[in-house]
Length: 128
Image 1 (cartoon, rainbow, N blue to C red):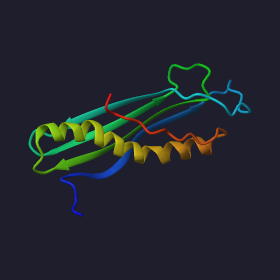
Image 2 (image 1 turned 90 degrees about the vertical axis):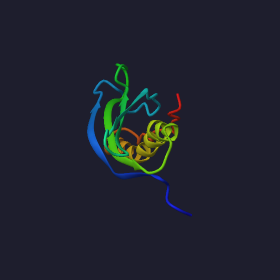
Image 3 (image 1 turned 60 degrees about the vertical axis):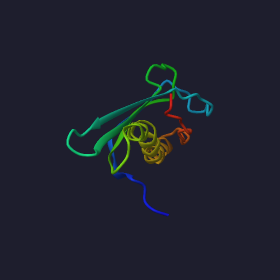
Image 4 (image 1 turned 135 degrees about the vertical axis):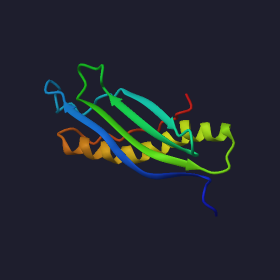
């Protein structure tokens, strides 16, 4: 096996805000979570590099939700010898999927540390 021509550099937590809803009945362990994802890609003009941010907002519009959450993770990505179509696909689909893998345990840990059950973000397709 050989390394991919598309690589990332140390994903990091950029922002997190978690707030419990004091009106929510904690005894009700069944609840729905409304997720909204946003991907932001900032490409370098001089190098084959880009910074990709993945933002998750959970239950922002839901008044009866158990909690609200806003979390953003990011990483720099770099590549060699890839055509533009491949680079665009990697930055807009593969990079957010990779970042989601880093976000998932943070969200599970935060929710599990509250009086809510751990929330495990489901698999997400970023292809629209």
